[in-house]
Length: 334
Image (cartoon, rainbow, N blue to C red; front, side, top):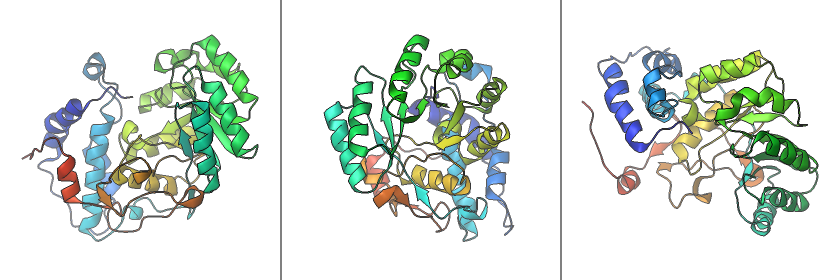
């Protein structure tokens, strides 16, 4: 997504981020804005030429990891929650079910189970030859009233996108995510003018520079997918949401596949603050993980509903022994 790897994330934190914040003295000011402090200390969301030459679009995961750690630390120091700098604007959060590139039969079975526990919003992966059949199988079991959007993961050509989206639109999709891929971003306005549903940008929307380029295309059919780790943390996500809002574009709050409750908690705070999001993904917890590293587990319940987190910091705490059992190495930065 961003071109990062485990090694690049560790290297960026060790070599660039940590030296910049190592000697900072944290304030005891009870009125401090933890998010503003973190945003001031950490790098912006735009890459430099050296990063691009190495194939890294943006060190988003590295920045996000440190930003969330700082937010958790700064708010816990004062016995406060992240909600003090991002007050929830809604008490109701509803998550979508996500169905991957499984056979149409398995997709229908998964959709039936999700529908039975009250989920009525679905994202369906369609970037393979069975995409249309999978969508049809799901629509047949969830009914006409359920919200379905599709995700091509950037694998289609322009012609394929026009053809596939037209066929899928006949089955009531709300939008199509990443039909073409980042390399074809310049033709998005042309595609948007040829298809009957909005286009949601994920791989094509990583940095603020990406967002500015997209809004300059002046297409009202584009939507932004804000993923906390992809975009570099909560601060950059808020900046991207502001750009979208300023140009009348909607946005979805996405997630990382297999994320732990740490990232799910951040996404939940973001969703509660940005209450005009179109759809919300994440908080799968041990629906996907064999074990989570944080408590309480941040997982949606019946109906896809998720409750607000009001505990200190991000509202979750690391279970050290679980983290240590999964760690491949440990390093202390000084």
